[in-house]
Amino acid sequence: MPPTPRSVRLTLALAGSLAATILAVAPAGAAEPPIRVGVLAYRGGDHANAVWEPTVRYLADRFPQRGAAMVPLDLPGMDAAVAAGSVDFVLTNTGNYVELEARHGVTRIATLHSSRSGASGAAVGSALIVRAGRDDIRSLADLKGKSVMAVDPDAFGGFQIAWGAMLTAGVDPYGDLKELRFSGFPVDRVAFAVRDGEVDAGVLRACVLEELAEEGRLDRAGFQVVGARTEPGFGCALSTGLYPDWPLARLANTPEDLAKAVVVALFQMPDGHPAALAGGYEGWTVPMDYQPVHGLFRSLRIGPYEHLRDVTLLDLAREHWHWLALAALALLWWAVHSLRVEHLIKVRTAELRAANRELRREMAERRRAEDTARERQKEMDHVARLSILGEMASNIAHELNQPLGAIANYARGCTRRLEAGVGSPAEFAEASRAIAAQADRAGQIIARIRDFVRKRAVQLEPADVNGAVEAALQLCEGRARSGNIPVTRDLAPGLPPVLADRVQIEQVVLNLVKNALDAMDGETEGGRGVTVRTGLDAEGRVEIAVADRGHGLSEDARARLFDPFFTTKPGGMGLGLSICRTIVESHGGHLWATDHPGGGTVVRFVLPAAEEKVDAG
Image (cartoon, rainbow, N blue to C red; front, side, top):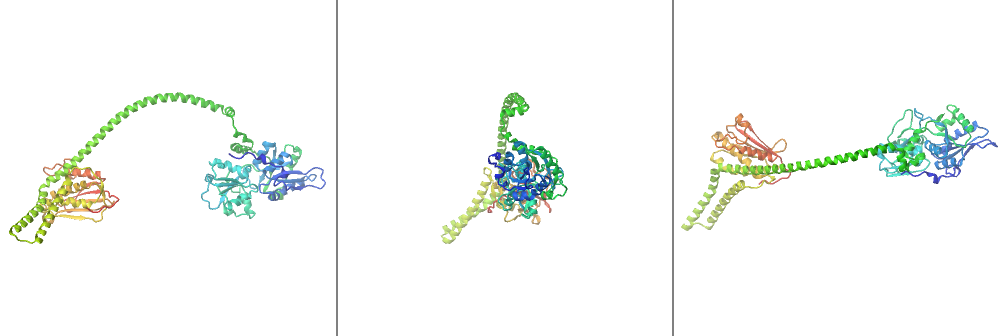
């Protein structure tokens, strides 16, 4: 909340900090006391004397029988002087006049017409200044969380106008700032505090910054105005709107004839008079409308409207009875509406419970169906692997017969040597090592077959594609040799791993190689064979391609190649390639077939690369 009025610290004008300096221009031995004019010295007594002494001297010349005296005052001194009746007229800022009018009944008789006033005649505003280069404070809203200095809580252009503008921008000076400080008069202290970095921003009456620069007391280029705006005809930097200029007001006990004579004298001041030049004004005009000032004070709840802070319930009822009646009707409607809504909610809740039960039942059935489909897919994968091995059984048996026959031959040779009593221990050791090597070879073949055909849960882990390809090709070696079909490996080194189930990848490669070997039956003249390649495609995915030089595919076969139960082989089930495509797509990949440029077919599939590397298996 803003501070309360400063009446507790008001002092008599002659005892105030600025009231000690009184400039009197009166003839010696005058019968009546001089006309006393209290002037707000917002920049100190010396500045007030320099600016307003010529005006007081002008009045003294117009009233030679009485003369005139200027009393420089600060805000508390101004209130005390008016309360004590120690001055006849006051020349003060717009906001202070409105407070004196409400508190002591002073009446404005003329308004200053400043040489810097805007087209409307208004000339009082506020400029919020920061040091040049502060890009973090460009608008009034940016002042939140910053430190701000103003001259005085009761200073109109030096704080109150800026206060209203900040509230409009959503910034409460008494709640949203990091710190709000008041320097006291003169206002020069505010500009120097901003310049020296004591505060982030300062509030000045509009044109004070330019006046200080003209006097050579600061460098105008070292400051920038926050939320700078322009008013037609007004030549100073501005952050707010403009309000009427300073009024000249008479006290309640000032004679009316004297007031009229003073007003006439001021209105008759010639253009370009030294008093006007010293004061920076063009002359005087009839009293302006000060309702905008009342509106500002009402919104801030200060001055004559401070009582608005203490609003009773009865005051609210009297002022807003129509809104209260409307609120009562709204509450009645809301009560009826709430009862109706509560009833509808109960009905809808019952319907939703029934719908949820049905939905849960359908979801449970769908999960069961999905689980069944997954189990069937696993069975189909297993059957497909068994089918592939069944078709290659004779070749696998041949692969096993080779190490088993070698074991038998080594064993018989050892037996004959023992029966004949010949042979050295070194020869028997070499034969034993050969038997063990062939046994390991047979065991590896059986282990690969066992891993390939056993039922197991899908295990996704970083897998080396080249290792999976090699494992699948080893199961096909017997089939390739029996058909005299060369199998060429073109495996790119350093491939990134793929996140996959290695056995399923081996199943896909084995099925594609077996199909390629089947397509090469009777097509082996000229060294034509099967080529298996691995590498990366343009998108960084791992690609595996199986190319044959067989009879190729017809248009109908290419269109239906991956359909379930479609086959081009007599006695085929038509499930191999369909299952392969399902496996590849479940790993986030893609499987397709194209014609080989030299005749035959190329079947490719790609898998997304995993992030971590694995060693080739």
